[in-house]
Image (cartoon, rainbow, N blue to C red; front, side, top):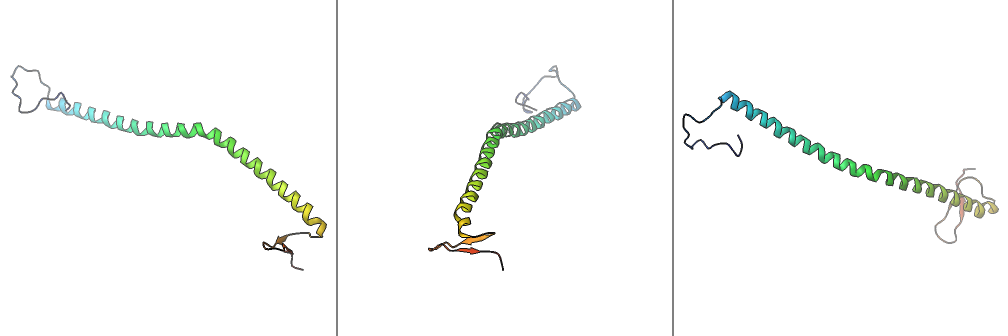
Length: 112
């Protein structure tokens, strides 16, 4: 049953204390259940440890995400404002494309 179990080749006397086979099987079954519960606990504990690591990083990640969203909004607004400053005096309205190669022509996307 465990490391204290006696090898079947060992000679014992009739006066040695003993348990019934049913009792032995009951103990073996209970021990097996205990081992299975310990294995399940180890799996759950590993999951909990990983989840706690992620939880500790979640607040920092949320702050980072908020900062990135703020930067995206600021940069998007700045780009739109600068685009208007440059293009509006040229009489361009609506959607347009700027050609990559020089000279950088501005082409209106609206179909007339």
